[in-house]
Amino acid sequence: MIVVDESQCKAIAGRLRQQTVRADAYLFVPATPAEARREANYWTFVIAICQHTKSLEGRIDQRWRRGWDYLVRASRRVLDEFASAQAMAAIDADRLRSIFSDDFDPAHSTVDRIDERLGQLHQVAEALLAGYDGEAMNLYCRAGGRLRGPGGIFERLAHMPPFLDPLEKKAHLLTGQLDAAGVWPLEDPENLKVCMDYHAMRVALRTGIVEVTDPGLLIALKQRARVSDEINHAVRRAVSDACDRVIALSGVSVFEFDKWIWHLGRSCCFYDHEPICGTRTCHKMDICTYIQAVDYACPGRCSLDGACKGSRDDFYKAFWETNVYTEFY
Image 1 (tube, rainbow, N blue to C red):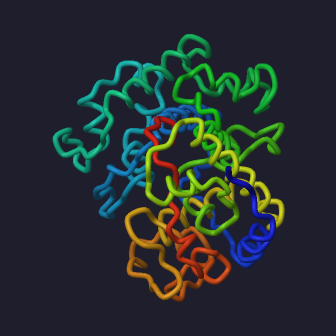
Image 2 (spheres, rainbow, N blue to C red):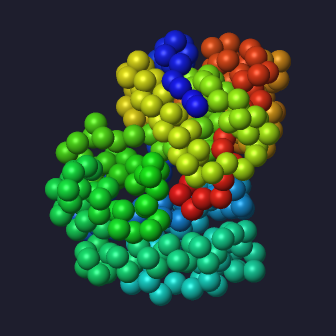
């Protein structure tokens, strides 16, 4: 159905080796145990509702933000509330809307899927209160800092519906973020994977690090037709395997690669416009997050131009991520 292209993984890894991923703008390294406990709770709740952030946009701290950036910047303004299991267990629709609005007026919020996100916050809060005294740090400690195995972090997170994704996107995002911040140092970091979301799929398909061998799937991906959860998971697994190969061949960390491919997908290879490669020059350098996240002296074209198959061949440029409704990414 879809397979890893080893030679193309090598080509992309070669380009990646020429770049440096800068420190994550949202990585806060706590100085005290109390700050560490707060960060563990905060990220657990924020990432629990980190799906379909396309609607989020506005001005925070006098700057226009969108998507994930808006989600984090807006929630950071009420850090103590968003890091409290008790507060998240009681949060209602108006309060959630007010947090995700520029001026704390719920009528001005752009956040969507309110009932879905409220349910996720309540589910995580109830699980933390019932099993871990309201502290995500206790979950980490009882798992012994291990991701995998009986009683590991992933197994414990899977008892919370927002983290039930078969490809564990939110679980990998949460543990990668907290490990990088020194909050949850992992005993088995080799089990950390790239977060499989729509940006990663889009970039993988267009670069050619995965090849679609099924004609029906090829048509569905190019026409943005709805696919089943089974097909969606199969595509994401293949992309995950390809990302593993690029990471191994490039020598970068999983955390660095994850940031690299994510920023590429929301900038040069974004869903709102044709990819910025080949004959197309950049029209959005003033809002590009890729050149902020990666040490790349941008000449107005994607850093993979020429190595990426999509930059040379319209057949690959026409690929899109799977079209599904999901609460997982």
